[in-house]
Length: 485
Image (cartoon, rainbow, N blue to C red):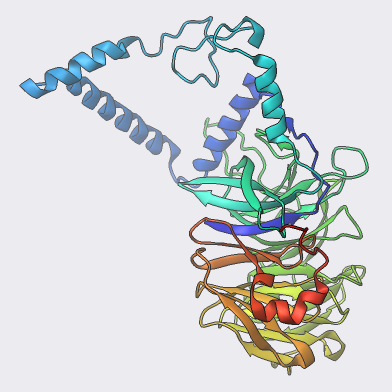
């Protein structure tokens, strides 16, 4: 499935992404050790589990041995096949062969491609690969956080020739991540020096927030980790102690992230531990912790115009507004009728936002009507019965005022004209995305909507192809089709 989508601004990606240095043996051993420690951390009795695993291995070896000693005529073929494979000497590899990352097909390691007799036209192949990896300033980049067959990864897509009939979408590279992802946020804070960077923060089932460099291919570890668990150490009895959370870490799943464009080292996070945290990503530490909610916090969003103002939405049926310059202040709250799923500030005005709810409705509020610690549901600017099921994601069009997209578990995506606070549906689509988990308008191609959901296939909707949208909003299209498109 695709659980989160982030557009990357045009021109910020390196034209030629670099390949990560292969990890050292020590790094690999440490990663494996940490992974095994996390897997076993919830086991009540690790020794019993280890014995159980040994029993399973012994059983597997017994079965394998039985295969090699068939008791019937049909088993002879299996025995001969195993002999051909030389399985008895399977682990006895040639020390001069390429040990790590070998294809297992008898390949050898040569000091250079020029000395490898099986590689021809080396320069031509190298040039071809370089061209394939190139990202041009005119390319659009979109990243999906995905899970597939127990594998978690970030899938980096390149979109060529957007807004033309020759529009082409393809996967540029994947980044394997260790935890089930739940949310993402792009940021350009220069974590590795220089003026700016190209990074993606990922919130997951684990309590940590990982920040990955999108300009590095085949990276195995994030460049920054915020929070999470300390490495487990063995006690006096030889057993590893229960893992402790790092100082100021979230203690449950990270459900929402929001990067502050004005203060580029600032990242907000929402968690199932009922807390909202503000992080300094350069220092790698939490600077503010707020616990103004009484249930899981699902979403956070910075105001586009006053970027010290932060919204948070929770399963406690409230939306809260906080000025992070005075985090101890109680702030302002709005009560709603169901669990909060998504939040979005209107980019065209400073004082309005929408909140999407688990009951299929979308509400708009004006912050100028806010009251402290509201106990009853306030009057919304409008209430929109948008979908038959939970509205999981909302996205404003940054170019066309009053154009809002909503995505739902009912497998539909709808576009709404919010003019005069009287919403009307102007387009609806049932993409091949399954239950919709994430939608996002592109800022560079403002009428292009990315859609991700339970079937794991990224969908792109050119909303101007809909007659109703084109008629109403064509005047706001900053990217007119090229001649011949």
